[in-house]
Image (cartoon, rainbow, N blue to C red):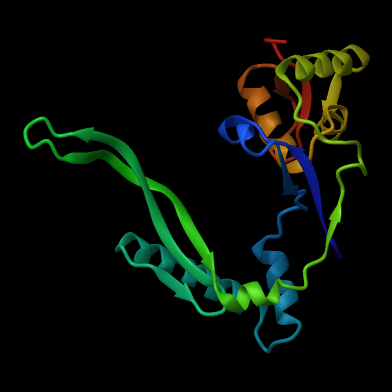
Length: 201
């Protein structure tokens, strides 16, 4: 199976140097239950054994990362912490310091074996399959929402993404933003969203 990608316009500070970029149009996220069922088919482990081992590994990795260590899982890669906070200059010493330090993210660098295993990955251009992706402006987004809600009272996420012509990965971030702005109101569940017109639209 090939991995779909789409070509889209670059926005933000990088738009001046690189006007276009290719991004993976991601499939759904695979969870631990699905992975465990796939793995146990070729091993003597049970699904419970595997899930228990991975939960223990997760807990131990968190402990080691919080101790300031980098964690290496052979064949997979390296995990390490990135920090964020408020940088300021100490008025007494003139030295730079960090206030409210906290974890920014967990960085991951894949092992060579992992990269070798991915060398044969096939890709396909899905840019024109569902319509060419061009990052919509705020005006285009508002116009699309008005069209949809003038035609029907409720809208599901997939219908909204098709109307805007955006990929799933971009679309879900956009939907989250529109909810926060009050332009969409979710009347479904957190995992199966159904939208009505928001108060700010």
